[in-house]
Image 1 (cartoon, helix red, strand yellow):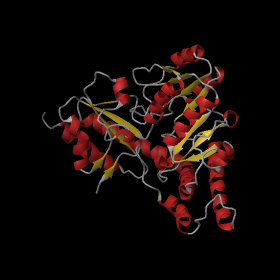
Image 2 (cartoon, rainbow, N blue to C red):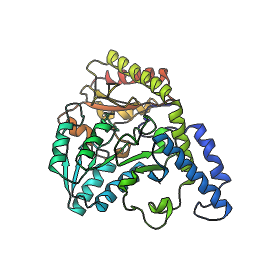
Image 3 (tube, rainbow, N blue to C red):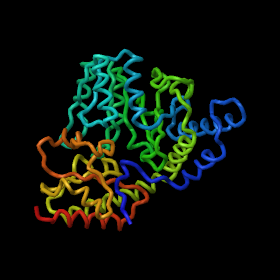
Image 4 (cartoon, rainbow, N blue to C red):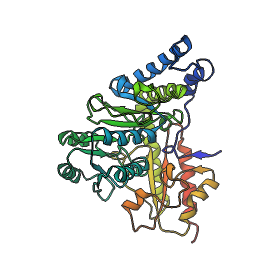
Length: 379
C-alpha cells in the first residue's frame, strides 16, 4: 500500500464531502441561472454554501466569489486591483507561489509597474521593517504576500502586515491557499482586502475555490461573458464543486482543534526520528518550528550527496509519495525558486513532506526508515 505524504499538493476527498456533492451530480442538475424550479433549487444551494463560508470566515456572503481554484483567484485579484485602482507600485517577495510571481511579472510588463521585493531573513520570513520602508517609498501600492509558504511552510504575521497596509493606504492581497481550512480566519478583524482558497487543499474537490473581496475594496471582473457570481465572474458555476467546498470548510472548522493537535504530533514525530536517524539532516526555512510554520508541512534538507537528484524517484519506488517543492512546478526542469532564493549556493537535497488527518504514525516511521536507508547508499 502506498503512503501519501504530499498533502500540500492536494488532499484526499473527505467521504462526508462526497456525500454532500452526490445529489448535485445526479439529481439536482439544474442551471443555477435558470428561473424555473430546477434552476432555483440549485441557486438556493449555491447561496446557502456561500452563506456558510461567509459565516465561518466572519464576512458577508457578497464578499465571497467562487472561482476555479486558488490560481484563478490570485490572478483575478492581482490583475483587477491594479486596473481598478490605477496601481503603479507593487510590493511582493521572491518566494511567492507562481500564481502570484508569474502574474506580477506579466503585469509589470503590461502595465509598466514598479515591482519591489521585500527582504527576507535567514529563515525566509518577511522583514517587516523593510516592508514598512517600501510602503513609505511607494504610495498607493499593491502588496501581495502569502500567508503560508507552500514549500517551506513559513507563516506570515497576517494581522501586522494588514495593519501596515492600512496605515499606508495599500491594497493588501494574500494567497491563503495553504491556510484556509487549516487555521481560523476572522475577516472582520484582519484588514486584508483579498484572500484566496482552493477546496482540494482541505479535503474538498479539485477545480473549485473562492476569493474574498472586501466590500469597500471591490475590483472589476476578471472573467467576462456572464452575470454569474454577482457580475464578478462569468460562467456557469461549478455547482457540486461549490457544495463540496462549503462542506469541506464546515468539516475543517468543526474538527480543526483535534486535527491541529494530531497533525502536529505527526510532524513532531518525523522531526525527531529524522534527526535521530540521519546525521547532518536539517530543515529548510522555519518548517521545523511548530509555532512559526504550517503544521502540515516539513521541508527536509538532506546532506550533500550524488543520490539526492534521485531521492524522490527512489522514495516513489518504495511506495512513498512526497514532493521536492511546489506541485505546480513538478515536471519543470528548474529547481525550486523558493529554495533558490533562500539558499542560492546550497547543494543539499530537498524533500517536502506534508501531512493530513488521514496519515498514521506508522506511515511516518516507514517514510523515515526508507529515507534513512536511501541516505546511506554510498555515492
